[in-house]
Length: 485
Image (cartoon, rainbow, N blue to C red; front, top):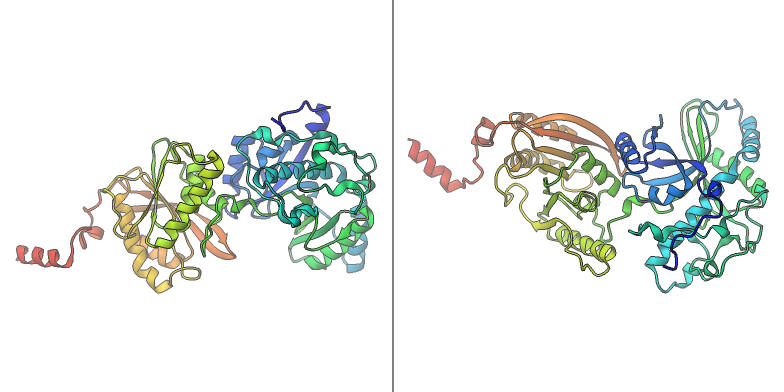
């Protein structure tokens, strides 16, 4: 094809080893590390600063990194310091940032940044056939799309346009001899020597021993970067985002490789509380789906969990539903959208997935027929009300226990209403056993992912569920009373 593999000119240049950092949903660092190990054969280090992992790869694997499903945002590490000695006064710190900017090893990281742009450009080119005005002005930071082509060969990169600059100060101003193909690219290259690159510094700081704020650091380090490269500062239309992550004495300088977080990847029709794809994926990994498992999401919302599930575990069967018709139709639209994208016109048989509108406390399923239940339970602050939860949670847990296979079944449930959930769980302890909990942040709110194992007790034989048998309606109960008198 037009972008088929080309012979790399020099392997050394292509396969430079670099350190990639990634943000992941807090609490799912180890799950993400597992995926990195499995798919890239790289060992990830979990940062002391929660929600981040680091791993080393050769640059030829960069496009594979974009296909990982646990990672929210990616960056390439320029340098990291385990024990940075901060000065004690603001003035000294400011001077320090200036010296730092001048002595950092930027060259490799900038090469990765350029390589990454051509990968994003390839992705963008497949998506849009006729560029709009705004796409042509060269701000690939604001327009890049994060859909990963299914065929890695699409991602081979034109290496001529990526030569290493000897003098790093000139990265922005040296005109490049672009190949024809690149000239016609929808998103014109910034390095044509016409305008300097635009950049911003984003600082994340945690720790109580610093004499400066994250804003001070971003401003002072930003000034130093600007002076060093002669780039132009621009907070919104930037080409390069320099990251400064400070956690106590740990300092990491990086360059961002994703503009829009990867966690929005499968959803085209968003609902009010659409779950992050990365979090949905992490929850699925916790329950280790096996071939032929029946996996149910009884409150699927816009379908984030079953969508992640079918993309990765195509030999399990997913059943999803919601009592809200709008949610069900959003899920269906998201699936159609993905089918179109993955099979150009949905010619393939589709996914092992069904979506149903149903009543959560009365699922249209046989008892003991489900291997895994996985869902994002409604919480007071974002959806539903707390009062409703006190009634809903015990009923949900009981109905989940009914359809789940005794002895082997599992449930992975995300909720923010921890008090209410644990109380409901204690009422159901004959049927569910808590195996462990992962604490996460959902939109800034503290939530728990509870992993439950279904006990071997057959549903309908313990006091918890005999009180109100599943099928009994009011009149049947009366009849039963009469019969027993």
